[in-house]
Image (spheres, rainbow, N blue to C red):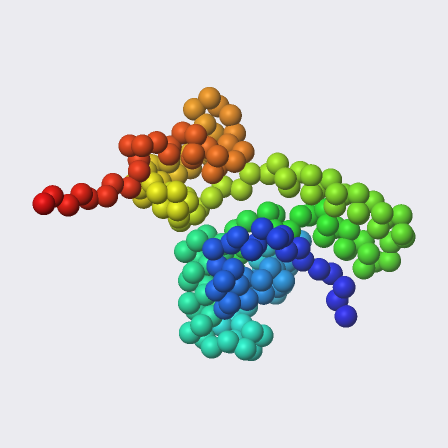
Length: 207
C-alpha cells in the first residue's frame, strides 16, 4: 500500500467550489494523481504538479459521467485551478498553484519514510513541517477576479470597482503604490478601494 499522502488545508472550506461535490471530487483527485516530483513517462517529462489521464480513466476512477467530469474540468479551468492540454498519449492536467497546496518539504519527508529512514529523520521532517506552517501563514496567495468581484458584492460595492482594483494589483504583481507587497488583499480593498463613490448605486423612484 502506498503510504505517501497529500495535504488538505482547512482553508479549502472557503474555496468557491467546495460545496460543488463533483468539482471538489475532481480537484482533490487531481491533487492525489499529480506528480510530486518531475518524472519521465514514455519519453515525456511530466513535471511536479502534472499528470497524464483521459476522460475514460477519470470516469472509471471517480464513477462520474463524462458530462459531469467535463463540466467540473471547465469550472476548474475557468478559475485557473488547472490547465488541461491534449496530447497524443493522453490528456495532460497541470495544477496551477501546486506548491501552494503541497509543500516540497513534507513530500521529501514522505519519500524518506518510504526508503526506511530512521526515527530521527522523521523528527526532522516534523520540524520542517512546523517551519513550513509558519512560512505558510505569511505566504500571500493572489485572489482570482471572481473572488474579488464576490467580495466587493458582499460588501455592497460595484463590480466595476472590483475589476479596477483587481487589474491595478494584478498588473503590478500585487505590489501597492508604496512599493510594498500586499499581504492581505481583503484588508487592502477595504482601506483603499471601498469608498462611498464605489458603492453599488440604487435607483431612487420618483413619484
